[in-house]
Length: 102
Image (cartoon, rainbow, N blue to C red; front, side, top):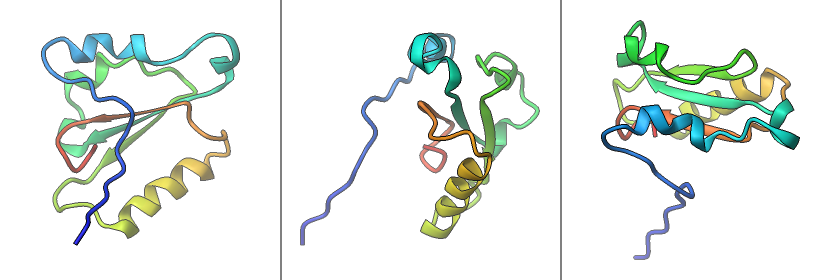
C-alpha cells in the first residue's frame, strides 16, 4: 500500500522560531492587502506567547482544539471560518503548537 502525504513548503521550529515569524510573513507590495492565519494550539490561549506574535489587525487568529487528533470535518470547519471572513485567500498560514495544530 502506498501512502501519500501533502505537506507545507517549509517548517521553522526550535529556539528563536517565534521571534523570526515576522521574517516569513509577506507584508509589503502586493501582499499589503492580504492576511495571515495563525492556527494556535488552544493550550496557549491567554498565554504570553500569543502576545509576542506579529499579529496585525487584518490577520486571523484561530485557537485549535487539540484534545483529539484532527478529523477532516474539523479541518473543513476551520477552512469555512477562514473563507467566511471574506478576506480572500490568506498569503500565509502559521501553525503554533504540536502536531494537531500544524
